[in-house]
Image 1 (cartoon, one colour):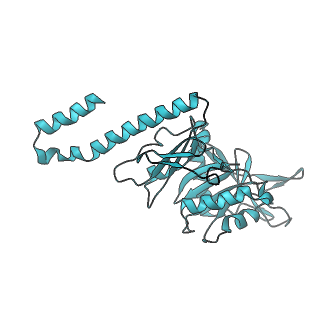
Image 2: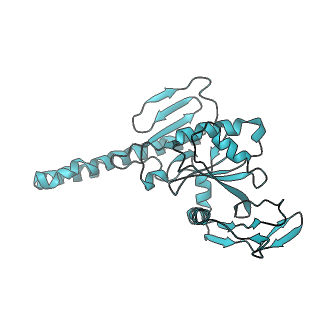
Image 3: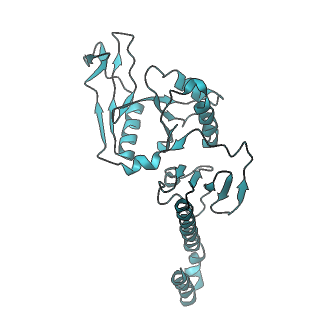
Amino acid sequence: NQSRIDGLVSRLKEDDFEQSKWLLGSPIVNFSQSVVDDMVRKNAEFHYKSGMSPKIIRKETGKCCKWCKNLVGTYRYPDVPKDVYRRHQNCRCTVEYIPKKGVRQDVHTKKIKYESKEGSKELPYTSIKAEWLKNYKEPKVIEARYWENNGTKYFVDGKNVVLDYSVKEKEIAELIANKFGLEVQLNPKFHNPKNISCPDYLLNGIAYDLKEITSTGKNNIDTAIKSGKKQASSFVLDYTKSGLSREDIDKRLNRLYKNPHRTWVKNIVLIKDNNIEDVIKK
């Protein structure tokens, strides 16, 4: 660290100030943020080795760039993206470090919040995004040749069983496959028999149904997922057109996973603006 400081000072001494004043901007910001990065990582490692379960929560604020959006999520140490603590110049994202239950520290402002008894309750879900990223393999997007229901295979024939996915459905399939290295299967729709419902996707063989959230209603996520119970127990939620913030979404997910009538809900992939923000599980 001292050598980096000496290097910056040397450049300022040698060059014309007008040509070197940029050194007081971005490099200083990046340098200070790298120090924060190292410090928090060491603290997290120390607490982890001490038997604690440190957690890192990164939230977006305002209109974030794609790099920042990609880091948004809740992570349990040591399963965290390597850049989760870092912020570029003018970034307004918040990163909170939770060394133990009931205590939160903002990574960048160093402010510590001691939560109330109510506020320190564990969330009913956790992020598995880092885990999915670790298991990256060759991405594939394929079309189903048939759908099996109660032991009977119904082959795609273009009449009774058809591949009729939208452009949006295929784009999201490709987004998920390329992000996590998964095989994503696009499933058919049934005209006959009419009582068979397919999920939109199989992600490595697991059924996921796509739900687009387009309103700000308090129960919009719960209603959307409830309607997909016949198709799947895991979902892809795209809330781009909803007008909701990530904080709004988190509140709704909190209620969803605490709802005794939704115990069947498993994983949820969160998408906004063609970016996978998080993958969570109960």
